[in-house]
Length: 400
Ligand SMILES: NC(=O)C1=CN([C@@H]2O[C@H](COP(=O)(O)OP(=O)(O)OC[C@H]3O[C@@H](n4cnc5c(N)ncnc54)[C@H](OP(=O)(O)O)[C@@H]3O)[C@@H](O)[C@H]2O)C=CC1
Ligand SMILES: CC(=O)[C@@H](O)[C@H](O)COP(=O)(O)O
Ligand SMILES: [Mn+2]
Figure 1: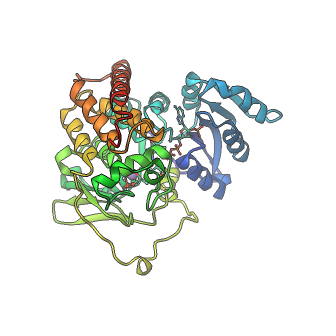
Figure 2 (figure 1 turned 120 degrees about the vertical axis):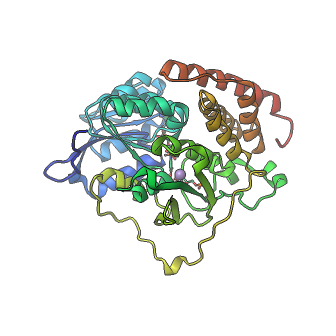
Figure 3 (figure 1 turned 90 degrees about the horizontal axis):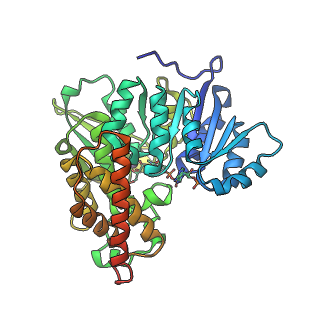
């Protein structure tokens, strides 16, 4: 693999941010704004929020701004009139943004929609900071194969995987006994199933520790987020499903751990602030100085750990099942979950209807091996159709 140099003022790192208007995109831009001499921003992208994208592109002097939804192109063009920033729109333009020659790409589009742009960055051998876990869930084998083939570097952004990556540094994989993913338990950690059945979208997106986009916040509330993260860890670190444990840790201070064969547990700790893991990828292979807060251990006494409750959080069980089944099952799980979460946020189904929808789709759709993009896209589309049909049968049936 070619040697990667850290950013420096003599040699600024060229970067692209996919999903620049989101929670991860903004945290990345906040770090860039702390040391603008270290970076040159090639491209920034969004889906529909043209005003926000234009403001972001201006503030970081991006060369290119791309909006995914073509209907929003006129608004973006108007907001960036009189600047030197190039403007484009559409799905192909998102892929082209990822193909532009930035050394480092933040993949922070939400959902499987991020797969094609992420693959494009991987296929030109970029350093890809991967926040978009759904990419690895729906196309893990394909993505990892392309990373190896094109000598790209995947830098895990997800806080748990970033912690494991840091804890693993320099160790032989054969020395690892298991990975331990910590989970906050989300806003409904202590809620009964009866109460969860009536949970509103507002309650579900109120994460106790992290400020995040709506989709991942709902995933945290169902604990599907931790299920997706088990699959993500399997692909990133080559560890089998049975060697990936989940422990509920309500404070979100210990971001995950590696258990080694000699009995050592190595963890990474920090305040729940995504600037910390993002900074580790942005500066990699060096560490950046940032204004992110340092954890005050004495002020944070009392770290709790408990096993997850699979009865109240069946999504975790479904994700493990999909990973064990293999083939297209994780692709199907992810697509059905995206449809179900959107239906819940649109108040079409109740909170418990999310896992119910995913479970029904997984049961009905069998999946063979998915080792190319066409197969992933086909299974993803079929699972979305089936999930929409399941949603239609359970909506209006009261709390589901
Ligand atoms: N937020 C967090 O702390 C963490 C997030 N992650 C992962 O990072 C990813 C991003 O999460 P987060 O930043 O919270 O999400 P947000 O919803 O805050 O942001 C999503 C970004 O993706 C864009 N986008 C949405 N839909 C599409 C689409 N169909 N095509 C292209 N772009 C699209 C949005 O544009 P627009 O603004 O125009 O809608 C926005 O820029 C997710 O995969 C999540 O699981 C992982 C760990 C932590
Ligand atoms: C910040 C981050 O990485 C999220 O994935 C977070 O872990 C979500 O919290 P849960 O532990 O509640 O899923
Ligand atoms: Mn996470």
